[in-house]
Image 1: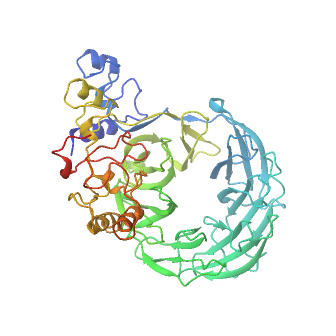
Image 2: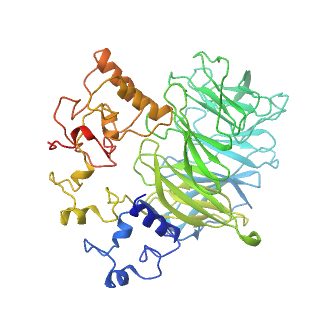
Image 3: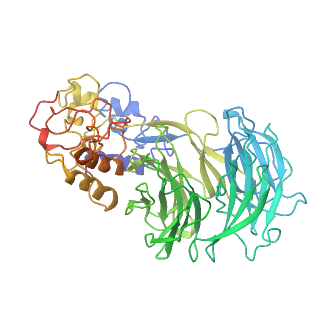
Length: 556
């Protein structure tokens, strides 16, 4: 374990991201300028402590209440952000313990402006929206709202074009003549009949059945047919998991229970379920493309000690999990926190305290681009019913938005800045200072130490100095069997697209046996050794920690 990691963990434990002032980045109670005057290292003289500059961090401002006019919602239960009025800035839509949705216009640091409140039922029945989705249900180019409500009901509100919502269309177990309730928290939307309109899938968790509602093009829904997923499930998704252009169903269950993937035949009918088992205590399951390969992966939390990830190999076959240790994770939210085009994780942590003196934090895990994560900081939040990520002020990046248990309140920690550490060799000293002191070298003048741009050969994933079938095996073992990562990830990235996936392994086999084009520069063994000229963390540069076949050769 590097000294840099230990130092970083200590600083984060002191509360770098929100518990202290940015002028006291290491949390020791002393202003950074005073620390430097007393001898703390600032090797490049820029007024920032070296110990803070080497960290990967996202900083948030202190918690504040979002100024907003009174709405009728007494306790917020569901939130989404979407551009309803087409002006390019998303509105905030909130639903709660009253039968209305409140739509707020984003007002920067000034807060929110109430655009309107819209009933979920024409007769104003008491409903609580548990899920909100903003989609175009009638193909008019405007986002409508689909609300899954308690009691097994669904409400569709069409956008009138200026952000105002029309009269709701209401569907329930009884109006649809269903024999059982459906889940309002998981309402997949997809084009089931191939006519270009979004249809609705209503899942019945206790029996594993799915009832399809077809859209007639105007946003009106009618019951169509049923399909079987598995015996029961806790989360239902309708996505193209196998990459054939049709949406499949994934009925997921945590724990030892069986989950299943139901593949779409392409004509709206489905194959028999393919069963698999998630890890023992997995819960709160979500789907997202976490490594940028175009396939949807599984993200889930373990109730006591970690969050997990299963990468999809592209055909609906999921690799063994990767786990990241975090005590008492309670909820995982996915979003591009640091705006580097990779999806990151924000994890709410419940810290049990004596005499019910519990407190909560949000830990950010930053994505390296291929589904590998690094700590990006921890921020305090109050005891909360839910939190989510959203750009509430249209400024730096995604903010932490919190709905506390106090009725009617909405709180935010606005993002202040994000920083990628500048210590590629992990010695706790900024790279620029290492280069200046000749501890590291920068012969090509790109501000990246040459030692962190190790020369290599493309395609030699196992680092044995040859390109052969073993390189494909090495990459596949890393992706799907949990083996250690390649010592030089750049070498394994066959065509230099910045993503390590099954395509790299297939491309090596194609090059060897089917006449595929040669791997990208600097070329396969036999070509001169060279470095990747793109900066670390940029697309196309995954880094190269070790590549023995080129260690004794001068890079070109």
